[in-house]
Image (tube, rainbow, N blue to C red; front, side, top):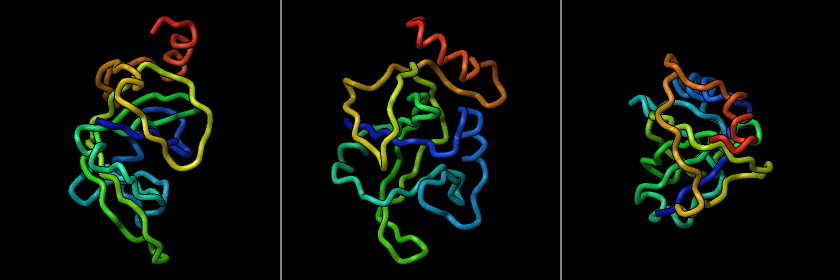
Length: 148
């Protein structure tokens, strides 16, 4: 099994990511999260993952928010797609469940990266937009102190 890591561009927190995925943008654009008509979160990326079969064996998309890997969502599909300007891209569909992970700092990068299962951060539990969860800034501080 193989995972992917991608920056959540313009997202400052887990609640913001969850809210963004609840609303479908009128015109899907690269790098923006949205929801399919069936209610499944999605994102587009310019390059198609060559190792897609390995990812589809239970892999997740780990999201970098404000310089820290903060959460993951299971990848449910990867298929070729075409942007509005006719350029080929990949459409990645995700499980709606956002799972917080032990925060890990990560420098900015373009596109996405592969992440081996052995190197993936551990889960912290289920994120509920309306539930009782640790605020992102507290989660970062606890991670910096090696308490989570």
